[in-house]
Structure formats: structure tokens, C-alpha cells
Image 1 (cartoon, rainbow, N blue to C red):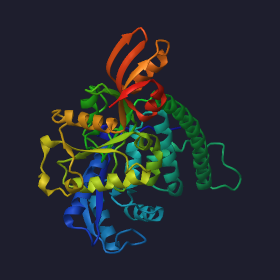
Image 2: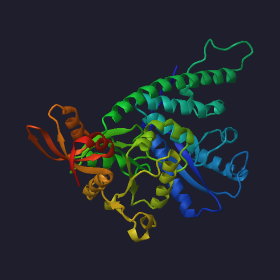
Image 3: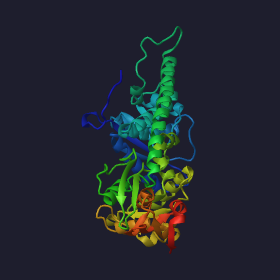
Image 4: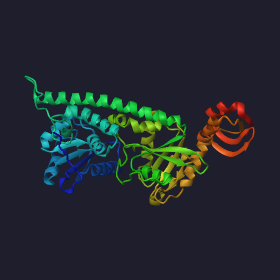
Length: 429
């Protein structure tokens, strides 16, 4: 039997003590920025932060991650403030989590588990739900004896499944392994269906773009502003997990499909990069990328680096890219202080909220789409309506007239269409 817990209900909000490490190479300011991001994650998860700590750390303690004295100090804070959970910004080993829980009598989790919990609460499509379930099962497998109960609701019951001489831990482990196997099989079916849909979409030959960037940079707001749609927007991390695709007609007549993708974040667990391969694949398959940055964020350059790192890992770092600095209405940075500008002199500065500068994005997109196109004049026979339809669908018709001998069309077309129409070309510019 599964237990449903709604952490967003005020009366059920768990109180949390947050712990962020400050390594020798980090300044106190950097550590505080990391801590603030963890606070945002915890708030998105639905817990209440009652204490935030920055802990200077020169060397990891194999037992508690932090030193014994600091572990006792953190435990005292948690008890004094009646916190139910202690949350580390760093990944803890299963042993470190168990040791800290035994010491404190509290649930102890890390950033990885916080992100897992957020993803579990926000996934909506069948594939996303399955992918998050798989990630949680694989994460929980070596942690079955711990105090944190969120993952236990994924395990299900074990009544009647225990064999002779089998411990409860072995039963739980077998149940989780069986669920992992089942989830992988279900995911394979869903992925095959998604690939079929994507092939059908590709057959339409409509150019595709993907909005990418650090979480909460304003990608969904920009998608709404560019398309006039109403994709879900919230001022929280990971507000968008499932890919949202909308059609856009550019001022020059081009039709494109624009997809909003999951936001990146520092130390994004690799199993979650895999878990959301479906939305991240949109970046690999897109014809161009719109990289959205929050100009008002104090770590905008670090967020740029992290996003590019993930894009390069996915094999999408070399795609045509439009760099967009969003939230100029909130700008607390001066453009002179940004080193990113040195390598990206064509970057755009916009506000998705006020819609300032959006026309520049359309211009850049059309520039990319027109880069490898030919402007040609054609005489298409009257019985070749299939070719006329293809020109309208995959190119941009600049002029069209009808004669007894056929249709006279001047159009801008991509290379693959140009090659199909060579015998009908009467002039090329």
C-alpha cells in the first residue's frame, strides 16, 4: 500500500536544517550562493528551512562527511529547532547518511535526494513519471534501512513474498530490484512510441528550436512570450520538467517548432540527466538552440558554464545558438562586467516579462534558417501539385503566379528541397 504525502500542506511541512560545505578553494560568498540555491530547492520540495549553515571543510570525514564535533553541533541545532530532517548540499554515501541518522535521530538527506523528490512531484507525462520512478528506485537500493520515508512509498508491500530464512532487508531489496526491472521494460515501450511520434514530426520538415538554460532563467516565460501560449510558469526551480512544444510563425513567414526543455543546475545527478533524456534529446535533435540566461543572477557566468558543459556532454554544444540575456527589467549586473560578452558579441538582451527585445530573437532565428537556403525562380508543371505543396511547406514563397504552362514561383528553399527542384529552376539569385 502506498502512502501519499503532500509536503505542500502547511501542517505537514517538515522543518529542515541545511548544511553547505565551504571548501578551501571557495570563498564565503560562493558558499552562501550555493546555500541559497539549496534553500530554493528545499522550498520547491515543500519543506521549511529553520536553519542554514556554512561549514568550512578541508577534508571529508568518512563517517559523517563533516568532523565529529561539527556533526554534534549540527545535531544540536536540529534538536533545538525541532527539525525533522538535516539536508546536505553535497552527495552523501549511504554509510554517511546512516551514521548521521543514528547520531542525530533525524532523517538525513542530500541534494541528490532533494532533486529526486522535486522531480517526482512535478513529472506529469507517462515517460517522465516512469523515469523518475526508476531514478528513485536505483537511488534507494543501497539506502533501504534509512529513516527518510519519502522513497518508502515507492517500494510497495511485501506481504506473502518472504522466503524461508530471508531477512526483511533482502525482501525489500528484491522488491526494489523487481520494480527496477519492470520500470525499465515500461520505459522501453514508451520510448519506442515517442521515437515514432518524433519521426512523424520530423517528416513535416518544419525547423525545430530548443530553449535551454539554467533552471529558473525564464525559458517558459520566453516560450509564452514568443508563441502567445500559456505554458506553466512558476518562480521556482524545475518548474518545467516535461518538454513543451509550440508552433511559431516568424515575421518572414517561416514556421518553426519551439520546445522548452528542463532547466540545468549545478551538480545535477547523472541519473537524472539520463532520466530526462527525453527532454534533453530535444536539444540534440533541434536545428538551433536559444540559450537563455538570467542577467540579474549574481552567478550568471557560472550558470552559462554549467549549461554549456551539459550541452557539450549531450553533443549539442556546436549547434547554431542564440545567446539571450533575460530579465533586463531586473538587471543588477552591468554588461561591462560580463566576460561572456567577449566570446558572444551578438548576444541579445531581452525581457520575457515586458516582451522587450523579442523581435531581435525572431530576426536571429530567421538569419539562422536562411543561412543555407537558395533563392530560386521555378516553373512547376500544373500536374505537380506535390512539388508546389512541398515548396510552401518547407520553404518560403516570395512570389507566385499562374500561367497556362504552370506555376511560376520565386521561393527561398533549403538545400534538400533545392536538390529536388533543380530541373524546374529558371533563375537563381
